[in-house]
Image 1: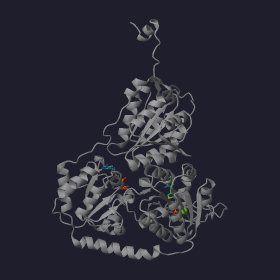
Image 2 (image 1 turned 30 degrees about the vertical axis):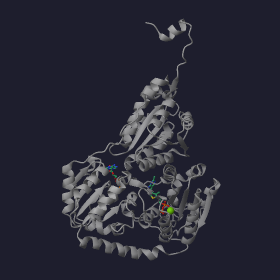
Image 3 (image 1 turned 120 degrees about the horizontal axis):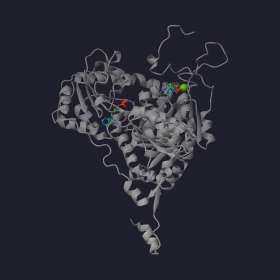
Image 4 (image 1 turned 90 degrees about the vertical axis):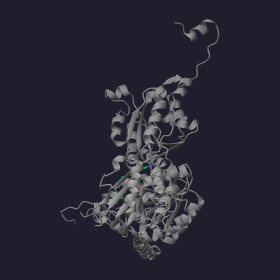
Length: 580
Ligand code: ADP
Ligand code: TPW
Ligand code: MG
C-alpha cells in the first residue's frame, strides 16, 4: 500500500503542512458553534490554558473567587437565556465546589453544564493517588440530569452536543461533562476536527399537548366557581409572556405568582391575587398550575393552608412524572408551556365566561384590604430601620426602575422582600429557588448583569451575603452595574440571641455587631454607603443605580426586628426538652 505523503516526499515535492487542532480548540469550537458566549470559571490545572484559549478565541470568560458562585452564575444564566450556562472548574476540589450549584440547577430546572477537568483515568481507576484524584463522573451522576465523559478528541463534538441537548430539552437541568487532562492535549487533523463538530438543531423541541388533554383541562376550568391560576418559575423560564398574559386575561381568573414568576404579569395587575394568597389557596375550587410544582413551597397541595374546600387541579408541565406527585391531578396537561397555553387560549374560543363575580370581588376585597393595612407600615421612617420601612423604600425604587433585576436572599430579608417589593416585568426577580439556598447572591448578580445588561439590585440578609461576599471583588473587577444592599441586623434571623451556657462565645446565630460591609466594597474600588433610615437607604440606592458603579449599601436594621426562620419557622423540628 502506498502512503501518499511518502509518495510526495519521494517525488521531491514539499509536503503540504498538515493543519492540526487539539482538544482545547475543539471544545472551544464546539461551544461557539452552539452559540455559547460566556463561561463562568475558576482556573487551575488542567483547565488554565483552556480558559486562556477561550478568551483568545472570543468567548467571554469570567473568573470567580470560588466555583460555587461561578456555578450559581451559570445556573441563573441558563434560567435567563434558555441556553445552558457553562461553569468550568478544575478537578476534585474545584469540581466539588461546583457540584452544589449543579445540584441546585437540577433541582430548580435550570439548564447548566458543569465542565470539570479531571486527572488521568488510568491512575484514578487504579486509585494510585494522582494529583486531585477523584472519580468525578460517578459522584456527579446522582446530582444531575446527565453526566458524560469524553475520552477522544474526535468525540468532543458529539459529547458537547449531548450535554447541551440534555440540559435544555424536556425539563431543563444540570449536566456534568468530564474532560480528562489528556483529552485537551490530544491532536487531530483540523479538517477532520471541524467535521466532527455538531450543531444542535432544535435543542428544546416543542412538546404539543394531546387535544383530549386540552379538552379535559378546559372542561375542569369551565366547571369552576372559584378558579385560581398559579404561575411558577417554569412559566417565567418558558419566555412565552404574551401567551400567558392572554390566557390569564381571557380567562378572567385570579392568579398567584410564585416567587420567581413575579412580574410575568405586573404585580399591580387587577387579577393578581398575591396580596390575597391565604384566601385564594383556602377558598379556590379549581387550581391550574403553570410551571409550578406542588412541593413544600405550596404545602404539597394539601393541609391547613389549602383549607377544606375540595380542590381539582389542572397542571401544565413538560415532565409527565410531575403529575400526581403530591395530590391527584384531575387534568394533567403535559407539554411545553407555550404550546399548552396557546392551545388553551384557542380552546376557550370567543365566548368564555369569566369566573363568578362573587369570587373575583371577594379576592379583590381581601387584596385591597391587605394592601391598605400594609401601606402605613411600609412608610415608616424608623431608626434603626425595621424590615417594612427599609423594604418600603426599596419597593418605591423598583417601581421607578422597572428594568432593574432584583436578586434576593436571606430569611426575613427574603420573605418580606418577596411580598413587599412589586415586580413589573418577567424574569426580574431571582432568588434562592426551590431549596431556599443561601449563597446564590453574588453569583446571580454577576450573571444577571452580564447576560442582560440590566442594572442589578441584590437585597441580601447579612448572613446570606456572607456566603458569597468575596465575589464583590469579581463585581468590581468586571465593573458591573450591581448595587448590593446588606440588611445588617447583626445575625441570622435577628442579632439578639444569647448563648444559653453563659460562656463568652456569642450565640450561634449572632455576628460581630456594627460590621461595616460597605468598607468591603470600598476595598476593591467600589462605592460604599451607610444607611440608617429608609430615606438614606432610598437616596443611596437611587444614586448607586444611576451611577451604574459597583456599590454596597450597609443598611442598619433593628437587630430585634426579625423572626426565627423568617416565615417558615414552622418547619423547624421541636425538642421535647425545653429551651433554656
Ligand atoms: P416554582 O418554584 O416557581 O413553583 P418549580 O421550579 O417548582 O416552580 O416548577 C417549575 C416547573 O416548570 C417544573 O416542574 C418544570 O418541569 C416545569 N417547566 C420548566 N420549563 C418548562 C417548559 N418550557 N414547559 C413546561 N414546563 C416547564
Ligand atoms: C447553604 C440555613 C436559612 S436563612 C439563613 C440561613 C443560614 C440566613 C438568615 O440570615 P440573614 O437574613 O441572611 O441575615 P435575616 O434577614 O433573617 O437576618 N446554608 C445554606 N442554605 C441555608 N438555607 C441555610 C444554611 C439558613
Ligand atoms: Mg441577618
